[in-house]
Length: 240
Image (cartoon, rainbow, N blue to C red; front, side, top):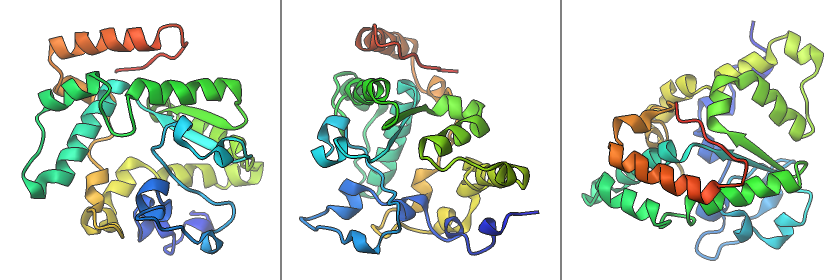
């Protein structure tokens, strides 16, 4: 039996997650616009790809909680390559994997070098664990229920025993699963308010997909870079 919060009027059934959780730099602060936050529900839920150092000081120094989702760098690259090329298909100027891999290794990617982006949030999560929650995509895939409960506790809205017993946690996991969201009509044929097709945000969602694309030389080169950049940080990635 479904919990009432998951009836047919649930917003995820009719809107893409990116329309429900708008991006600061892509949909809110665009062309000099200043958004009207009075229409937002409380607490406000926003998303961003900005590095920690680029966040407004008011955000860094406030009680705002930050949830950072990290994925292993090889799968991150493959996902980014596919996503960028899907957006550029109508321009017929897609980039080869070799071109983008070379730029990625040089740290030339959107929002700056991957390693700087990750390390900054990683260090902040250690320094101030009540403000920054650092999550690993691979760990969430393996133990989704544990990390969902961890997220709820971090946001100071933990599940009650009653909620767990009546299936709220399991229903959230089902509703928000890659399989469910990617098969919803709104995400197979709909578009974002900004014009992008919703389906470009859903590809495979699998761990280790990089193995289908990386050559041995690419993998070894990237292993060397990652080892150098993350040495001594305590952060390790799962690639399988």
